[in-house]
Image (cartoon, rainbow, N blue to C red; front, side, top):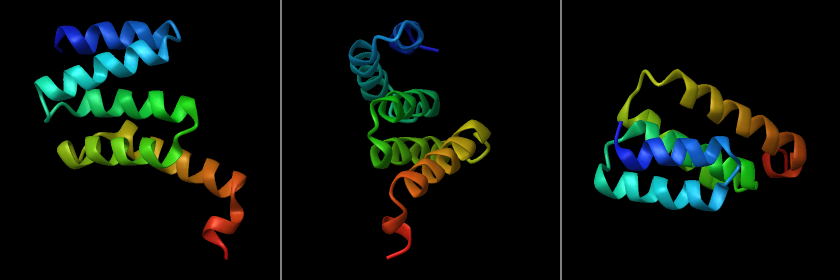
Length: 92
């Protein structure tokens, strides 16, 4: 893990979403193939209620590492949240 990712995980654990996201952006910039950075940025976006952006980050983590089970589970979880909150989006 790189320093940006470690610091971001600490900020995320402390609930500092803005700082965590900034550090995760730097981690991704430093290593665009860092699946864990995308996954954690997806967690930040999910906590902020940016569900479509969260799904995109979880999917990117999964694209990088097809065996990233946490990303698979997180995508399904966010899809369930969206369908519960906005049933008309899936059932017009």
